[in-house]
Image (cartoon, rainbow, N blue to C red; front, side):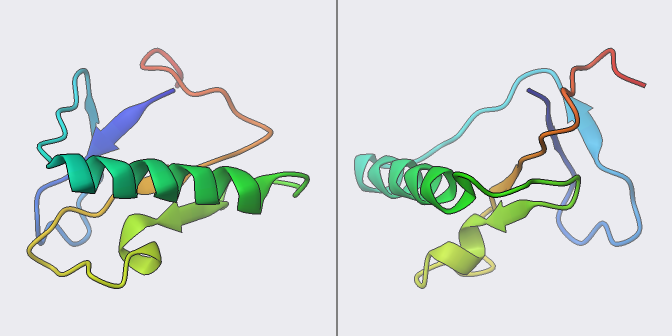
Length: 86
């Protein structure tokens, strides 16, 4: 598993690998995030995944606004990413 991200409005800038990620959320938001992850798991089950298979929390949650961070799940059957992967 690999976590990476970039600053707001960093168009054209490559994401930076993150050693540690913090999620600052309420209990309700945590429950929503868990439901999002379950939804991704169910939707991806049995599907052939490639390097472009991804799901955005912003697309899943109708209450999401640009004031919030997006959470993107990238799934692939072909890659196991780690910090040391070139």
